[in-house]
Image 1 (tube, rainbow, N blue to C red):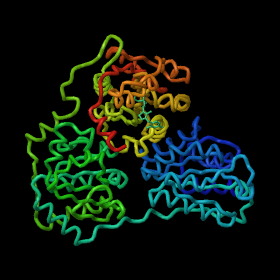
Image 2 (image 1 turned 90 degrees about the vertical axis):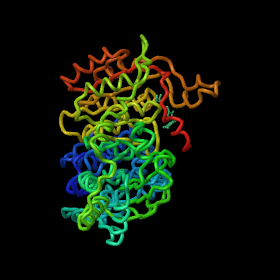
Image 3 (image 1 turned 90 degrees about the horizontal axis):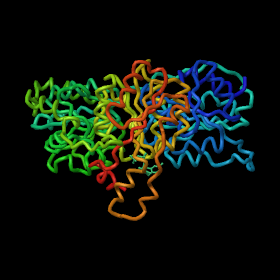
Image 4 (image 1 turned 180 degrees about the vertical axis):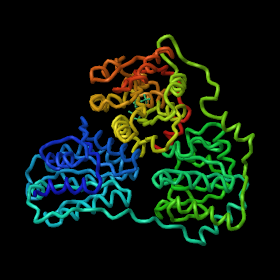
Length: 548
Ligand SMILES: Cc1ncc(C[n+]2csc(CCOP(=O)(O)OP(=O)(O)O)c2C)c(N)n1
């Protein structure tokens, strides 16, 4: 058996069930072998989108996302999506064909290892026929167990060589994550007992650890309010004391309560400038505890009073046990009155002046109408741009894994690919919304065909202002040059139809009838070209630009 066949077979044996990619000669055999062994292949139209699909698939399914690309340009096309996945610590394996070491004059030659490292990915290589299977298992385990984005380089000469012998491979079960040290548990419990207004703030690490239930049990035991970073949106959905997102997207009530907390317990949250609004959402005299699996994350973004290195679920469980052992049960700010205020304090309950016109719809009105229309069990992926607050603030999700916020690299144009991957991972029939700007749509246009070919129940929701709205609004006072970031009207619904999807243009709430009737079919994607009123400016935008 050749090495490329052995690599494909081994990955299927390790449990890989999906591969996203773009096939060229260099990755043909490994990819077709994977597909033949049950790891079904999804063809993307651009390699960056292929990696985004694997990323979205991993975030929603909790499995390792796998992508496959040709060497040279096939690989370099992945780099933006790869940087996003690496910064997000997505468990992802990119199978990248590579030129043979001796092929120094190959047109396809670039230093793929250096480029991978430059964007934060881990580099592994199938080095020889004798080591090939061990190389594959090591790369897979680093992705799964270290939660890293790994590029597995597959040199063409090694791929074509014969394997001396091939034994089936298996990955050992994932390692148990560490529980917190008992003195650390005691010290946090002391802080909890003294607190009057505690908050449990969960981030990406809590989603990856599937720790929602244990964090809720802890918060209920100590009387804490609950909140998440933007990426962990939905983790506590439905809880009466869930304040939603902490950060630029916080509702006014959430912001007030978060800033008034006297104890912030961060679980798997970096407590970065987005989550804290550059520090404004944490009171100067609040005690801050940060629990994270990664020692390097503790205190990296802001000073903390106490850092605990542990699995966040284990830590929540140990803390609750300790509180029970002490006979402590806190109430904090919790009361029926507060629960009522929280229930009425959502973004959609805030009054606003509807800026819709004859030809355009207010993006808030549009999004609230869709929130009413779509089934509650929906998934949401949000691309980058000025528009992105509307779906995050007004379209609720009930499951953190159904929410894909791939903004770690703050790149425009990654959302459609990630939404496709998330939709592939979703239970059958669940509607996935890909919320995009027109700029992000044109950066990823080819993937409309991918979504249509897969016949996904995907609602591609384009907030179309015919502009790079983020730049228009940021430079509004600058005056000159705005014509460089404005574009002519386009018919994105027609582009959707041309790709094999359904298409609808929305200028008024009644135009959403097209969405209603699509919901009864959902047999292919629907591309909604929403002509939004371009003068509604998001409040969080200036905050966002402070970081540079
Ligand atoms: C790949 C990439 N290119 C450029 C930028 C800079 N940028 C940030 S927002 C934005 C505009 C995006 O336009 P659109 O998708 O239409 O969303 P809008 O801002 O209009 O809501 C641009 C160009 C970026 N973040 N990423």
